[in-house]
Length: 128
Image (cartoon, rainbow, N blue to C red):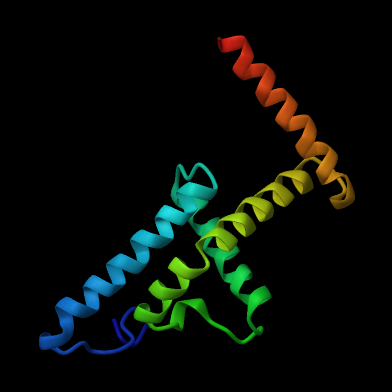
């Protein structure tokens, strides 16, 4: 497994519980942020969110920053500290992707968002 990159390092038995606790907490916080930003329904959605998260850090840090090799303890602190900004970025990035899909120029996304808001309000009012 180490030869194909699935294992990066050996974790000492004494440190394993703390290691996996930090790793699990990091992944849980990431998943929670993804769910807050968009409706994650499948593995493909998670993959897109992971790419967007890496893009967020590439834009807010330098290009060489690698989220996946960032230490778990530091990553947890960073996710908690920048949660609002990350969610806003993920929502905006997802919205930009939708605009691209339907051929809406980026300068018109604001108008598109307003129309979407109006449509959502109409749909909510119809349910009442």
